[in-house]
Image (cartoon, rainbow, N blue to C red; front, side):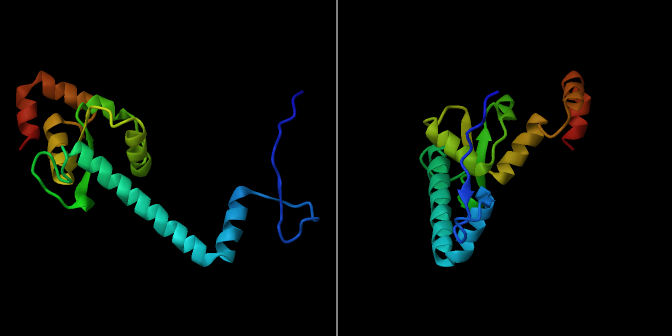
Length: 149
């Protein structure tokens, strides 16, 4: 039987106690003991996230920090859209997704859209509807006409 090699951390305040702390507990104690450093770390992380978001949205906005369809430029309403809707099945958090795009040298198939243009695109492509409804719309032009009203 193979033993797993685990790193166990002793409680800093009682090194001889033999009590092992979880990573989350160590972080909680560090934050409580160093509130100023924690605040600086959070601010720096926020700045890094914002910098990455601006870079990614600018890259996919064809060099501008704006929607590629309507030109809307308020960063609070801008996001990345999959040009090919089938590519959107990989779900990531926004920060992790922006990091993934950056690390993979900005792959093709994405664009910067404002939320209004995203919703319009979804409505036009019937992305919000279940596959059965999409099939019905493709089979019946009348059904698609009723949905668009």
